[in-house]
Length: 140
Image 1 (cartoon, rainbow, N blue to C red):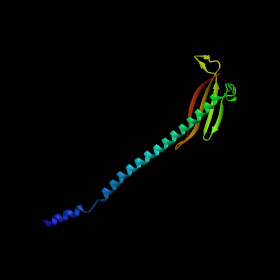
Image 2 (cartoon, rainbow, N blue to C red):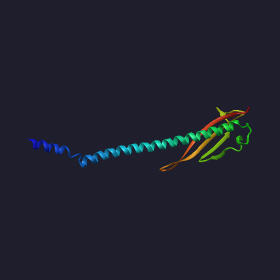
Image 3 (cartoon, helix red, strand yellow):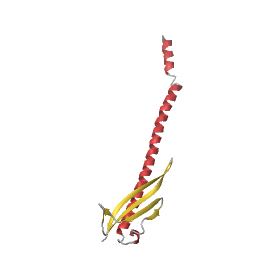
Image 4 (cartoon, rainbow, N blue to C red):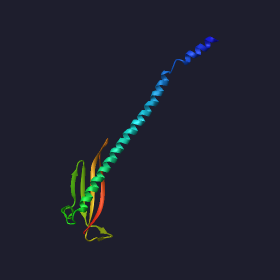
């Protein structure tokens, strides 16, 4: 009887089988891959948000600059529209038009449509992204 107890104890002391170790490793690998994928996605979204924030700041700064200029400034002439500038990887364009409301033009006012665009690099190529602002400047 003592021999049977010792034989059962030896079986319990052997440790894990190769199949158990492989299954545990597979489960662990799937978990690590999921976390790595999540980190990559979060990093890409963070960069995307950063680009949108930077483009919006450039757009608001340029629009504020244009709104502070005199009504007849060279950068606000209807005849010379559209305008463009470059700011690093961002391209800034604006067009000046006469605003209309229900078919009638609004006198002594100009509409400024400003676009900041950039190319976003994707794994499948590049994509054009843009931030648009619209303002009406009144003659003072």
